[in-house]
Figure 1 (tube, rainbow, N blue to C red):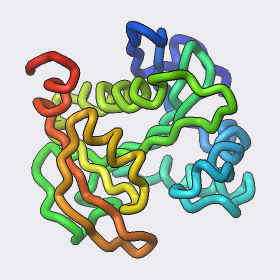
Figure 2: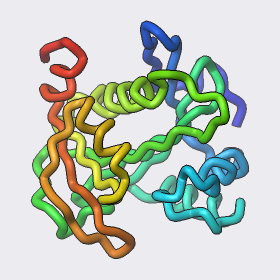
Figure 3: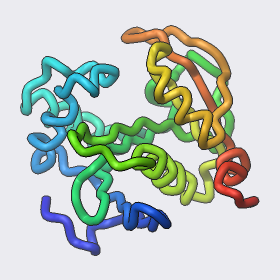
Length: 193
């Protein structure tokens, strides 16, 4: 899918790193790009290291067809740079594993692997993702369940306001359930709601 400003559904400008945007993911057109990201060793926590392009296309078609799960391609300065998934934890990922509140929104994100990292890039991405998810007025709290061993993401989550609820056991992993209210996130940005 070619990207034009009109296909973007969310845009945010970072004071230091410039424009970040989000567009709906195309499961077929974006499959090859995502395959390169998801099979990179740095993406091990996404559990798709052995996937082929068809597997990736199938997984993101499944997400696109699901009424409570969405996937998006994130752009930095107009170029693909990160992946975002948003889901309703009452129906996907966390069913029966915690007590959801009205306005809970689940989220996953992945930065594209790179040999030339930008200082502060991952923090700018998670800030963009949080702004995007919380742009929906019905969203009151973001819920995440990263692998319990993914300490880098735990630190990043804490930096944008997430509080640890505790470990949970999912079929594919032991995870660290964490939540962040709109107010907690805004406080890390130097703002209030």
